[in-house]
Amino acid sequence: MNETPLSPPATQRLQLAVIGACRAIFESLPGRLLLFTLVFVMLAQLLIFLPLAAQFRTNWLSEQAETAFIAALAADVAAGGTLGEMEVSELLEASDAVAVARVTEGRNELVLYGGPIDAPLIEADLRNESWPARISAAAQTFMVREERYLRIIANPAPRPDDIIDVIVPETAMREDLIAYSATLFQLSFFIAIVTGILLYVTLLYAFVRPMRRLAAAMARFQRDPLNPASSITPQARRDEIGVAQRALAEMQEDVRSSMKQRERLAALGAAVSKINHDLRNVLAAAQLVSDRLVSFEDERVRKMGARMVRAVGRGIRLTEATLQYGRAEESPPQTMRLNLRVALDEAAADAMATDSSGEGDWINEIGEDVALEADPDHVHRIFLNLFRNALQAMTAAGGMVRLAVSAEPADGFVSIQVADAGPGLPAKAQENLFQPFTSSTRREGTGLGLTTARELARAHGGDVVLVRTGEDGTVFAVTLPVGE
Image 1 (tube, rainbow, N blue to C red):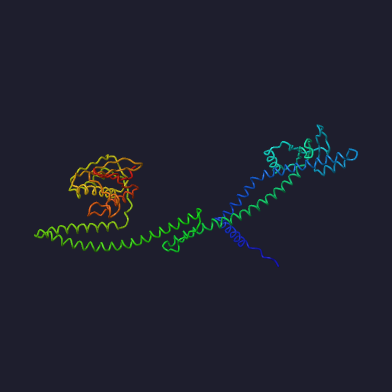
Image 2: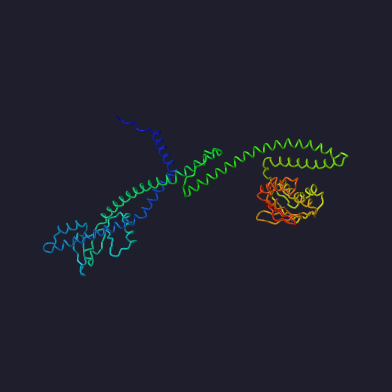
């Protein structure tokens, strides 16, 4: 029955399937591990191959010298002390040589001779041949393809004082060396396969499988971070994988807690926004009533009405600030070249017009040529908040109202110092600095000014920090990028 050969498309599909399977294996971590193990073991075998080949060559030459020495001894005991042509040929054939000579007690004699040599002659003196010379000679044996003869000079083991000099064809040694190399490579490949499989299995169970579980746990957590079942269960390992598993478990728990808290805060924020909206309407109505109480003729009613007006005003400002803070994040800055001195003059003028009745000393020590690469509206809001806080603190303290600014370069940024002459920040305010609704030093304040200023400055890559505070005043530093 004739077999139908595979059609070209089927053969091509089979080839593609095999290539795809091999690629999938070697692109995986275990497959790469097995491949690298095989390659490294074979490289190690290649590194020691030439020394082994050199040692094989030396042993082969030594055996030839010993065989030739035995042939010379056989020639000594020949009947009548002379050998015929047939006996010489048989001894040379038995020793695989074409000529044998020796030096005994200072006498040099040609023991066996098979005729003239018509090929290059290479000398191998085993008495003083160094290891580099042996390795080089073994390598040349593989590369040279022409017929050559080897002249082996050695001291025979039975008589170390004698010298045996034998000439043999190199072909026999080359064939034996090639056969030895093939056997060695087969053994090396077998060792590489066995070692690779053992290392593969060991590393697979000790490292690869735990890493796969770690990666799978990350993927499960990414798909459903709020599900406790997606968390990894750390193993009782003391190595780096165990440390990674425990760190991942802690991180997953922290992220899950943060996400739950975020959901609660989002729900709470939505509820507060609704409450603030309704509360603002209630306070607006209460403000109308309190305004009428202020106009009463009764002194006590007017005082109570004035207090009520102030309280309602604080409530309205608090609800407005809360609603404003709870809105979406600030829009990204639309940067442009901005003159810093002019921008600070405008912010100071607005702040003084609303928070100090236009009175106070304004000192601007910034040069006319200092420029920023920033959003003008953001810069105005940053310094308006800082200036208003400073002016309100100084006005409430009843002391001198003095506000000064200066600037100095700082690696592509400019650091603007804002100094006031106020009484300094209390310790409690310093602890909650830049925290919304907690950092204000005034009862009617919301503490959002510094929070907003820092948020806007950091959007530009800068920051707002407290430099110092005390009885002689407070200094804030604002870092913003300079213009080119």
